Length: 301
Image 1 (cartoon, rainbow, N blue to C red):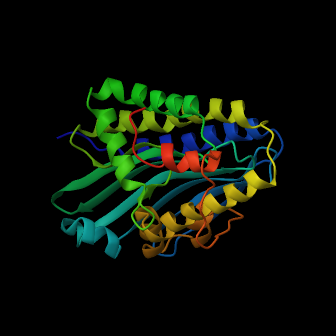
Image 2: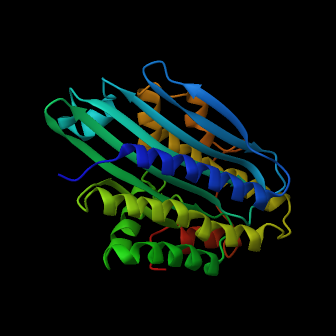
């Protein structure tokens, strides 16, 4: 039987958090991450790192958590009823970056590992994760670069992996009540164990490391683009979609809240400023209208 080494996974995740925070700090060039270490009453804890009011990033949160216990959250047993009665461990790195400049997209990434164990039985485990991009004023070449990196990450694991995990991302980050995608997608996968532990672990390492390869050049290319109050107000309006998705549909938010995670860490994905506007309609032919018509639906990049 193949060994499932959760200690190696944890060591990778903690190192990944360090690497991503270091790079985002360099990209910002001004602000630094503040760290909060927290403990969960039912077992486990984590370290939350948030950068606020930077030169490039209005807020960036990069969280590591490792929680465990004997009672599964209702959202997990509803998804996987065979987990009932098992002790569980869940660990991962989750991040959301909200830039100042409306021409720099918001980005999200997550890699995670789950294992449920019971005496005398084989463990049930899987990996999940991915990354996705949410532009406000998209550039075609940025979206193509983002997806090209995603495709390169997937290629060593099979010709079909990119198409499958891209389609899964488009489907997952879809807001049915708005009939639009949250952004231009990327990769999303869950319940990954059919490749075996070692190969699955290799994949989440590639995805976790690949996030910076995908995002950093976009930040560097767009961070100094001039913008005005009109663009800023549209950015704040579109951030509302981010809030709607995370509070209504996101499984990670639900799992975190139901499992007794640290609320401040779970909700660090929320943008620091956001607005809603009743019956907003972009002006025909405007850059804002182009976002809706050309980008907020699944595309072959």
